[in-house]
Length: 92
Image 1 (spheres, rainbow, N blue to C red):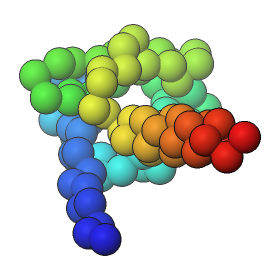
Image 2: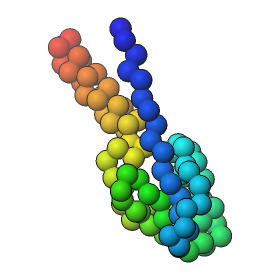
Image 3: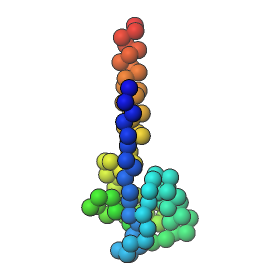
């Protein structure tokens, strides 16, 4: 068996169009969303690839969640459940 290595994408954080810092993982992104919501901070966006995504100051929600942005875990778990179902059907 070979381990499939995964490179976690980096996201850039901006305030009113000015670069603030880099976000290196999903936990950091959630913490940014929490802080923005807690303090109701306006003007924050993140950049993933070429796309700018706004962060709502009341809810912390993102205006878009592009494919490939911290979604590998969800797709991996979905594939695992699919394989389990297929294997269970074969064992019936």
